[in-house]
Amino acid sequence: MSKKRLGLLTMTLVSLAIGSILLAACTRPGAPAITSSTSGGGSTPTSSSGGGAAVHMGTSSFLVPGITIPKGSMLTLIDDAQVPHIIKNGTYDASGTAKPLQEPGAPTVSQNFTGGDTHQIGPFSTAGTFHIYCTIHPNMDLTITVK
Image (tube, rainbow, N blue to C red; front, side):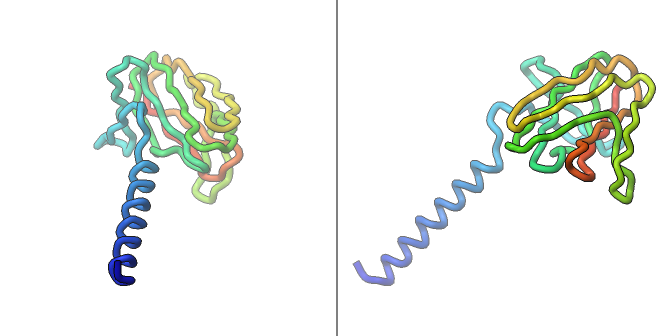
């Protein structure tokens, strides 16, 4: 086999390997689908398993900025990263300063994630807009709209 053909074969195999790795990294088997909503910039959860709404967390952010859930629902937070998170009621302001705050009607949220784990918060029994944030990662906050 000529050096030119060997080089072409090697580059093809490397390209396929990298493509496969990227494709695998972009998928999360078994994760409930979350679709974007046109109002308020949040998202509407959909799940055929009846397990309720779920939001995934990455290394230093929620993977969606907001979610809309029905009144009375629980919300499942899934830590896809192997990093700790401490999730509490509140948000970050425009300058990145943490603002702990429990809005009236919001359930108390205080969950410690050690990495790769899942916790439920709620139930959210009052309609309204509520905020949670990670005390460890600046600007990691989530808006929860309850209807």
